[in-house]
Length: 131
Image (cartoon, rainbow, N blue to C red; front, top):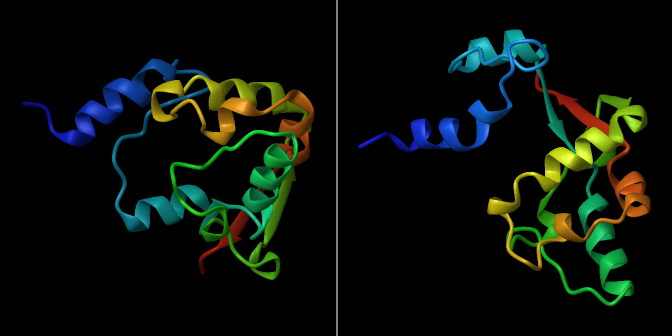
């Protein structure tokens, strides 16, 4: 029987590894992650996902984020150390979010993103340095 990590890799990672744009480096320990990521990790400003859920509700859609209260996502804005405008790549990001349909049920917020709402919520990537 395969380990849960092996199953995850084969189902969700391997199909995207092309050896050019996406390369699988293997498992990393904490020091390896810090070296690779430069001591930063991706996050979002607190309120971003609450805003997403509120905007979808305003349009008549009752959605959720894996059943996790949206206010539990993100960090205070003052803790975000780097922001990158990814608007030129937004179509790719939204396509990547949508290709993980097996991780969402029918009322998951990510399945109900219009291009306009996707641009409003996801046109920036946010990072927080951890050292």
